[in-house]
Image (cartoon, rainbow, N blue to C red; front, top):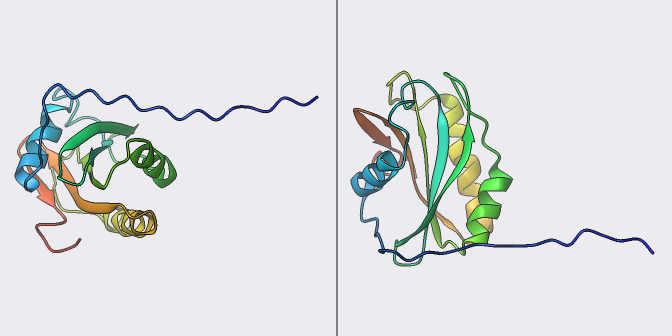
Length: 145
């Protein structure tokens, strides 16, 4: 008899205090407080916030950590995490170790790819935030989402 692997889906929600995202500034502040300030200008990382229908934070997911000039983002893993957490909306974010907040062509293309994947799964991409110690760039504020 052949034994097959069981697929297990788990998500643990801890409602210690419900945080609500009301705009890009509140998202930036929450993201920055969950970033390692010692490496924000050294190493690029990609994270996402998962939100319920009322934009209350379900959790944060650290998807990848890369080098000084980029990090790999697996959109399938992002969507799996969003589905596991029963997210209605997501905010994606990454830092630019250089401090330059201008989105690259790769940033623009990734955002479009995630918008497309999110739409297919009935999840709303609310924003893509590029952050540094000194500020942030919001795709939503700039009308790009």
